[in-house]
Length: 112
Length: 118
Image (cartoon, rainbow over all chains, first blue to last red; front, side, top):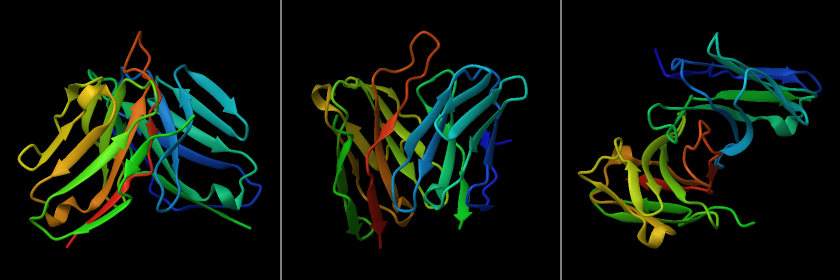
């Protein structure tokens, strides 16, 4: 089992819809979770971090964490074509908790 | 606040040649990371520095890759000799500190260097 798993997509949603991106991880002791957005040909950009069970909202983005199920998700409300990118989930690798393990990313396409 | 700076942005070399990449982290960030991102994959950590000391280099191919962070600020990553499979984007990231009190600090990436080995 991979340490961090994401569906590679593409996930296609119409403009204005909610995009739901999912990530599962294998290490039960993980405490911090990060979502990065990566446009084609660009470097990853941090968009959300979440440390506690439940939801964390920032603008149109909501991160949801369920440690019992080892599952973290990212919801993008009112999706825009400019949201079209690859979304990377990252989880620390214990015992070196600075070492982030990245999933392969989910490619999101928002069509007008 | 200025972000992470990297140079060069692009590099094309032939196999068996050497290449070096430079990174300047966000001011005040103690921890610096070098990642390798192969097309279609997530970034993979190569080496992590805390100030000028190495914390983790377990995935660095030490027979050909080397890195240093003198004076705890700028860092260079070198490949010598390069192989075809080294073609990738090399990303530098930094964070304020490393892990502390149960909290992993956010890492911020530079623009990357796209290396093509022919």
